[in-house]
Length: 203
Length: 165
Image 1 (cartoon, each protein chain N blue to C red):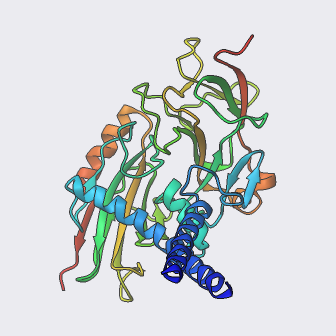
Image 2: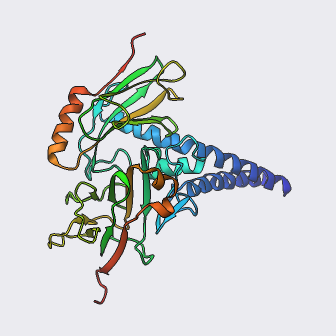
Image 3: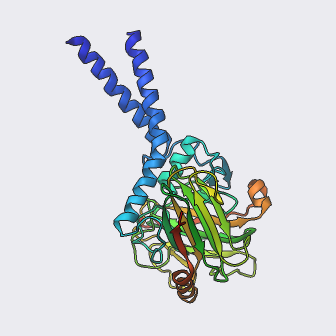
């Protein structure tokens, strides 16, 4: 009887360990696994050139299936993920940010805000993203957008974080130039994210 | 004790490898079931409404793209998918059952409509490598005017159908 129980405990522990480690290392748990989606890192924006490719490793494929299913291969589109502001603090709904950057070398680009469940934030503000066709380029060659839960009302481009919780941003580049694809560390311009303040913070 | 440890390692490693292999297929299967539940049948083009906060079939949809989908079932032969030209960005991409993006073609590479014949094996433009999969047509629409135009074009010109034997 004692032997049977020991074998049962061993098997149950092995199944939990195997399944739990697979879910963790594939990014199917809320905790971000180390290393995944970080093959490329440009100023805090991370990506993996194997997204969508048959050459993708099993963990990358499983990660993308959970957090970016039906992502295109890099020749068509590249995706960069950002979860922190420029000071390394987690992006949060109750803070206000300025998102700003230069124009990347691609046919089309956009930055979209996703809630902590990887879908568009559950609000009807119709302000989930900024893209090449709507961004206004200032005289200094920089486009800007405000990210915050309420419309700033000052005429600036607004991306709503209402009901987004701890959100993230996806920077999409469609038909990026060969230089951006091959040497993103030097050829890709990435948006900056500056935190202006948070609710409850002393100003 | 060594026996317990050896069995623990073997079983844990096996479960781990099987799970990592299965997870993408599970995600794809779930997405296809969600499409099917909303009335989208295999090998028929379906035009997804414009993306907003209620779009929850597939994670991280782009609100700037208009999607049409075809649930591919190649078990009875090849299927042809056509994405109609509309003067703006349009792409046709094909995903196998394990989530791999087997092919992606956009308007800058092809004059006029984009058309691909897909099979599970040789004898078509694309070998999907699985009997089930998804074809997605994306169009860039960032204002109501282009949205209306793209919607009209896709309803008139996009197509997905099994090729008669």
